[in-house]
Structure formats: C-alpha cells, structure tokens
Length: 456
Image (cartoon, rainbow, N blue to C red; front, top):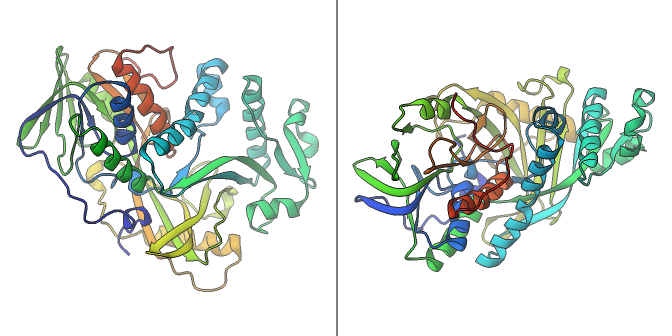
C-alpha cells in the first residue's frame, strides 16, 4: 500500500492552490505551512500589524503535520531527569510549563477561528514493563514535584518483584494496584506490563486543523497574509537589512524569516559570514521515518491514547533503548455521516541519512507492517485477519539534543526558528509559534532550553 494518511484523506480536495508566480515581498516570511508555520502566522497576525507570507514547498499540511499519529502530548522525547541534569531544575521546569501552555493556546485558536473539527482531551496511560523504566519515571516525577509541577502517582503492580528496592524518596509518588487495574487501563492482559503512568493527552487531525485555520486567517487578514504552495525555497540569503529568498525563478524579500519546518530540508542558509549557520542548521537535525497503520472499529465515541513500553527482548521494533508502540483511538468520519472509531498504531521507524533518500510516495514498509501486526495481535489477542484501511509514513526532524529550536539566531537578528519535530511536534509547535511571534514583535524573554546555540 502507498503512503495513505487518514488526516490527508479528510482534507478539501477542491481547495484552490496558489503558487508564487512573480517576485514578491512581505514583512515576515514563514518557510513551511505545517502546524509550526500556521501557528506562527496566527500569532503574528493577531499581535502585530506585519504582513506575512507562508512559503510551502509542497502543499499545506502535507508534510509531518499530515503524516503523524494526530497525538497531542506535552512531554519531551528526553527524560525530564536528563533535562534537569543538563540545564538545571529551574530551566527544565520553565520548559515544561512552556509546552503545557500550548493547551490554552490551542483552545484560543479554536475559539477565535470558530473551529468545529474534532478535538478530544482525556486521561491517557502508558504501560511500563521493567524496573528500570519504573525507577526512571519515578525520578522524573520526583524532580517535577520538587520544581512545583503537578504529577500523578505511578501505579505499580502490587506483586512486582522489585517493590522493596524502590528508594524511600519515591514512596509518595507511587501507589500499589492489582494486575486487573493495570490491565483495564492499558486495555491488555499482556503480563509484561507492571506499572502505569497517567497524564493528559489529546487527539486531533492536525492537517485539517491547519487547513481550517488558514481559511480563517485568509478571510480575516486578506491584505496581510499570503499562502504560496508548490513554491520550494532553495536559498535563504540573510543580509544586515533583511532577507532574500530564492524561490525557483523568483525572489521574495522580507524583513524577517522564520524556519517553521522539521529542519530536514533542501535549503541553504547564506550569510555575510559564510556557511557556518547553514552547516549548523543541517548538521543539527537528522530525519526519522515513522510508520503508522489504522483500522476502523464500530463507533463508541470513547477516545484514548496508550503507550506501551516494551521489554527489549520482545523483538517487535528496531528502536534502541526502550522500544515502544503507541495507540490512539478517536471518532472518525471516513465518508460523510459514517462515523467509526479509528484506531491508529505506530512505533516502527528508521533513521534517514539524507532527505533525498526519502520518497513520500514510497510503499509502506512490509517489515513495519509485520511489526505493527505482531504488536496488535499480541497486545489485544486478536485472532482475525487485520485489515488496515490506512498505512502511512512521514519524516520527523530530530535535533541533536531532542529539543525544539525556538527564537532568533544569536548571530543574525532577521533569522528565527520554530524548528524540529522530535517526535512530539504538535503542542511544542504551537507554543513556539506564539513565542516567536512575540519575539518578532520585539518582546524579550529569559534564557530557555529552546534557545539556539551560538556557532563556535
């Protein structure tokens, strides 16, 4: 099966697409019309009087924004304890609060744009299968509470062999429960899971969200917003006075430019000092291709999001460390007035050395399909043949430190970043869009773990 995303399936196929057909200019150019670019545009238009141009190399929301799990999470790809070790508790806590703030920003965008597309928020769960995983998450929560953040207890199976080995400082952060309680929350009787984490998560079609938000922005700010699709930017030339974009046969001038992408792109950054920034940009980000599948079930209207951290000897993924699968369930209208539950499963992925090696139209990996199939059969004890209506893949840009790059370049004031998916891109993109817009406006912020490092 070819790359067949359920989120792209729901987009308006009759929408008129406009290319850049002549030289142009705007106060701010945003490269990338996914959720990072759309969120940045929303807050620039709301909080400034600047004109904004969205430059998209392919189509609106057809990159990682249209090829993800539709999963809203406010955690990092790195354990919180690692952030504390590297940056200190105060900055790590501030970063967590920054990402958490995206929930309110998302509500603000929905309300102001009058969006009625489905969005669900709910209590979600993650299953742990080893003592090391449990102790690691207990330390994360211990540090979060120490920093003033709210956490929920880690529920551990009452017959887990290592309970007596848990340090006393964690005792207020855990609760002992029966295996039946764990099975109910994880929706599986797989005995490998011996603990459960609880947190707020959500699900939405981020591609449809971007499409509907752009419709609102274009109608509300027709004189200040332009969207150019199928207009790939080849060069970003940064001068002291502003920026010039090389867009095929045309050039586009702007005072400021914001890179609102995965960061794994075919563009060159050129500055008066040479290619140091360009080298950092391309060497700081690498690509991961993620694979996801989905099938339909009878509609219940009960959304869910569950992560399953496997034992390393299960052999179901190629992921290093603690391999995991994630499952989401939400209401889904496949055809008009035909509602089902859409169950999405992801987990398999592989590293991408060069963007040129990724083909968005490539057939779905048979190996990834077999891994997902084996996980579903094992976890949910399914005997029948599984029919996946959707099977899709997408490139995620991972920065070296697995943190989003947010804000102005320290050497070039006209260059800004809202960059790096890192596997958890939706809420961080929204938070960063608001912050970058305010920085372009002239607001100053305290140092953050998302700041762009200087070129040495």
